[in-house]
Length: 372
Length: 240
Image (cartoon, rainbow over the protein chains, first blue to last red):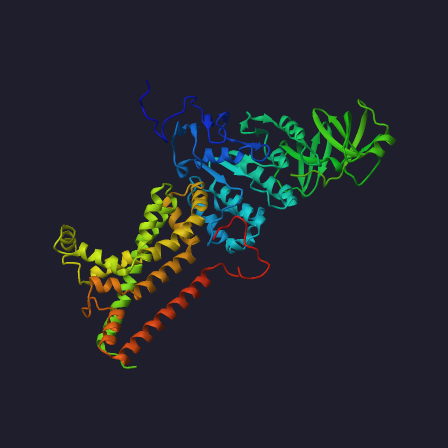
């Protein structure tokens, strides 16, 4: 019989690997479906699923803020074994709450300074400056947190967590109240660049699958307190489709960077150059860029169009057609492995006499790629 | 106004007692209220009732038992008088001791209310950023509860100023040692010196009024600037 007590903070995990390992984690929510999870030491992972499925509970349990049973270990340190748990503040983790929870009675700057002060790997000052600017927080620094709007409070809370720069960063709907356009245009590219420079294991919970698609390569799916292993994004997209959420459809595209000049990004996709303007992220030649294309932004042409102000034109193969309930038709277009969705009207569909397997030309403006 | 030296002495003693009591209670009350706000046990109710008792009991009940506790005829009193170098009955130290017990609910209750409202959520947020519990109390919870702290201190101070029953039971009326303003006032009335009684009574009313006004002003000053402005909605997620 093993009688040695677990030594918190020093005992090594059985697997000996440095990532996050969760074994048989049971809270009052998932008594029948214990959670297992194994993630590497760095990388961004999405976590999504229907409301009330237990996503927040999982994050709280990982942070040590919710009573649970089971084994949790991170970076060769035992956080929980059986019922014994390491105190939250001793874990190399940070958790951002849905409701911001800024420290009341203090200014925005105080909030940020406090998080940086208790960081074990504080960011250099110039990095903080850069983040402040990108998040649009610099003009708010001296405001008391009580005067911030909901979206501003969320941005400050997210920034506070970045300033803390924990090795494991857990986020719970951190951008739900922030203006969509700002999220896609500024915040997500900034976050992606940040985690490329300061690697951490990030678990990003969101109902907005666009956020997950732009930040993560893989996503966990939680349904009725049942947690999946990390899945490729298209599989999670299928789950979401089966839940029939939302009427907009965005395709996730990966393309190779050719050049970035004056905010105009040139990318290579299936042998064709495409362009994106108003780019916020930092890209170098050879990088892989990820962006979203709204299905409604794409037009289809039977013949190769002539010179046009619409910069992007891709030769695509029609691989599927689906009539939508609102009278439009959703086309599934394929270009070397990449799947692009386009929504066109029923009338266009009949006029163009679209046939599956034929090649067409998909056009979109340089302003359409989102999240770059 | 023409106030006798003995009355000035009583006034000074009262302010000294109230100030010392408030300071001691702040030091005791903050950690006590903090621990209580985090304590999840059925015993918590019992402890809270115990702390609230001085609020409802006649001060003479507390005074009576303190008198027995301090009495040099019994073991606890002997031990206490050894600890403090002299018996606690009829001494200023004894008065401070009694005032701390007597005014305890006035310090702990407002703090407990503020900590219970803010505490759980803000301490969780602090812990989730690696801030240890004591630092979370000092750097997160206390700044978030400033208004409650001001009102707790003001209430404690004002309540101690008006203490009478307990002082009468364990302190008596030794000038410069235990004769506080309320006792001096009572003695003036008993001796039919209504003029002197008026002067002391008005002085006490003036001091307490100014103090409560100052507490309000301070509370207003500490509330976030401009939060009373229209159109500025209190933030979702920010407590306090």
